[in-house]
Length: 244
Ligand SMILES: [Zn+2]
Image (tube, rainbow, N blue to C red; front, side, top):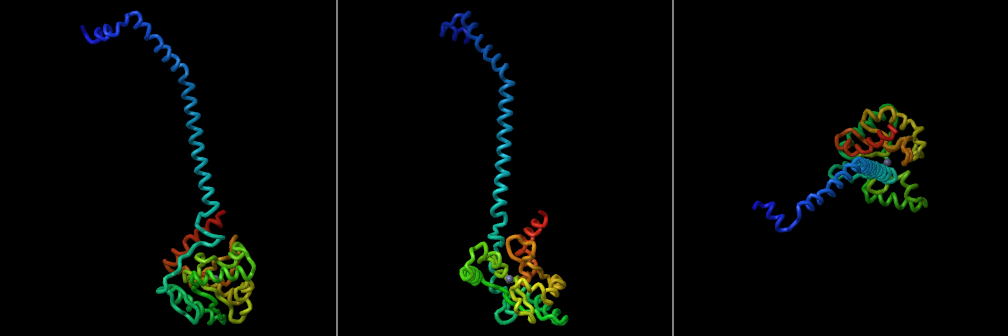
């Protein structure tokens, strides 16, 4: 007796019944074959919907990131680390700047003097602590909210002055225009506009800046690798603003 016969005997299933039992299987296969195109269609539709949703949600995520902190800025100001004390040099009483820019800055002032222009340095390096005092005390004295204050002064940790690469410049003959937009009408400003780039200085907040008010007195140095690295994000932001 082979194994098949052994099994049949064991379960005592008649041959006719065994044949009959195969019929429902065929029916199921037929049914599956009939509905399979619909099943395939259903799976494809579900698959497409899922991919579309995934794409949409990733687009939404990108938009949310762009809308909030694409560059970690606050009220239009980018974050800056404080330069280490060892990289600062005193160029005159109360004015400290990054050693990389000190020579260029002094040469620029000499050149201006030869052209009959007297540049005054109003503010150079400012520590994050000092910036904190300036930001919060002036905000309070002038009864401004943070957004209003940020248009004219950077929040602590977000000032270019903390890097040592920023300098506020005035006109010795027009001191009443110090830190005022009217500084742009002085001979000093006109001279700077024409010559500052030769010394690697550029205006940080020009008239196109949406969040920060125009500051014709505030210049930053971009004449060393370190300075370029410090202002890389800012320059990228400026470029994107121009592209829009
Ligand atoms: Zn400044």
